[in-house]
Image 1: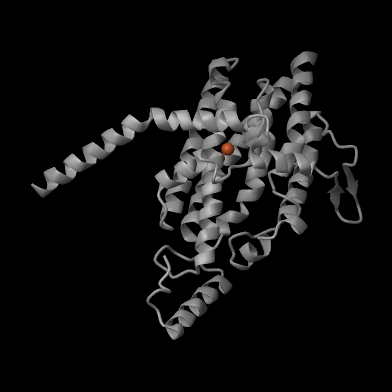
Image 2: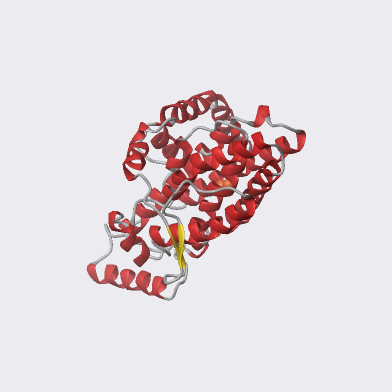
Length: 321
Ligand SMILES: [Fe+2]
Ligand SMILES: [Fe+2]
């Protein structure tokens, strides 16, 4: 909330100094603290986008719950998809401390005014995709999110600590699923490789556009919201994934991927940024389907929200009486 309407110039500059000192000391900004309007807006946009990604991200995998190949796999997948719902709720709650409501954010999502991660606009075509999403998509999410545990806004950072613990279970179950399939038949191994081929490039796109095309990164880093650039995190993810792919016995669909001893990192090819822009703009393979499904779920749930509000009203009246 800004106090600039009422504060004098001197008061405002004292508030700004206090805010900047808090950031410089790597301490947290809390909901009660004064913050610049740009900082608040950037956080609302980022946390909402993150919350929407958790909720929309339930769809591609939820698609397989009824067709899980065993009771064990079904239990694991159900637990994972439920965790994602929980992540969405922690994050909507963190956003609400900045003066927006979960209802408003949901409206913005289903009207296409706020975004979610482009990765969830790709279809899940086989059960191997459940494993690949756990390994690569939750893996990329972990690379993005571990530094956010130290983000400057308190409620966001604290939500991320819990989220990251659960994400590491997600990644492990995915890798374990793929490892099991790789020890199966030739057909199962081919399913895993085909799935990895489809998800590798979209997973690299999860880190966002290259640094030179990411105009907001510098300001977000100055405010301590972001801790690393998109390209740094993408490099970290590639370096982490290559030995895991070797242990699994799969390859990545990138002829330019190789170790560079001089840099001490892997070199790799450029994702198709035109495809990325198309998916972000709403033209990916599943964008329309994901939003239509989310909208229908929201409308189907209207009676639950009405009932909860009526119940809360009655409790309040009873307390007053
Ligand atoms: Fe999550
Ligand atoms: Fe996850």
